[in-house]
Image 1 (cartoon, one colour):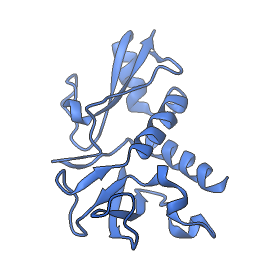
Image 2 (cartoon, one colour; image 1 turned 180 degrees about the horizontal axis):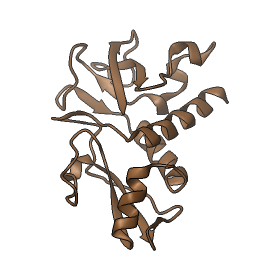
Image 3 (tube, one colour; image 1 turned 120 degrees about the vertical axis):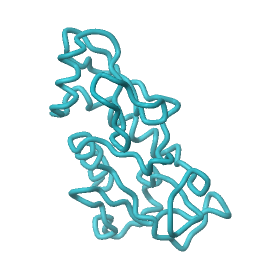
Image 4 (tube, helix red, strand yellow; image 1 turned 90 degrees about the vertical axis):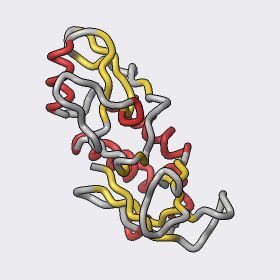
Length: 172
């Protein structure tokens, strides 16, 4: 599960009326300011999920997605999704066998055999003989990081994949 803590930072760029969120909290292993060493979150714009003018709640009217984060998420999933040990993804791939399989956001999971709403589909991957093919991940343009159901949530294995990529970025 990927979650956001909406503490307001003290800087207001690039949008004059919107504040950067100041920390990102992952379910099992947060990336904290301590992990940044001498650097600031401003040095890693691709790790900022987005901006909100509200300090209390996140919703579609107060949140603006950060395109650099969605690009980072897409790159990370494209390079790694075929290697991630996600038993649910593997079971779906084995069941479907061929074609394109949607990677669903877990904030509003559909019933078995059904597909998510477009705003809850993170992307799609190509399957051959029930195996996710390397480099075939395609993001879903309609996916929203924040929807009426809350902030997007990846499966724990995919979350850990994104955390590893973020920590690698910070340690460079």
